[in-house]
Amino acid sequence: MRFLYLFLFFIATPLLGFAQKPSEAHKIVLHYAEGAPETHPKLVRNLENILAAAPDTELVVVTIGMGVDLMRNSIPQPLQEKMQALEARGVRFEVCENTLKQRGLEKEDFLSISSYVTAGILALVELQKAGFTYIKAG
Image (cartoon, rainbow, N blue to C red):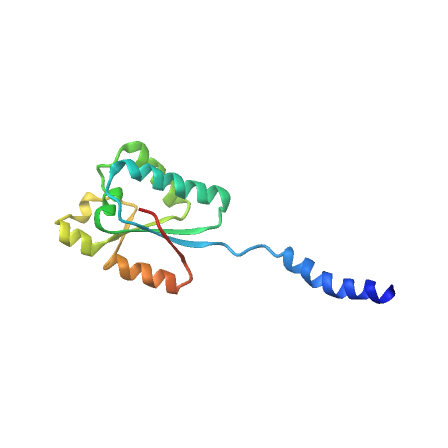
């Protein structure tokens, strides 16, 4: 019986210690290529939900193609305010410059919280190599 207690002590103790370790913060990159305006609030709500569940999550949204419309100055003011609040919490919003060239758009047409990457697809690859989990968001 004494052997059983010693066995359980040496086996269970490391397992309990492992179970109590805090999990590492998540790193997520969302690939957004959807231009339909009705999908923009859904993406923003998803970002808010992620941060509500895991506040330390590092989030990057890479917009390409029609998805860059999410970042345009013309989106409704309430949505802009939610996105600014997300940016204040550390969410990065990246816009593909190749898309801007192809669509004849100017950086002045975009929200000030936008950051720019030369090639959105390449940015997605680099973020995944840096340990980000890839999510196709639209």
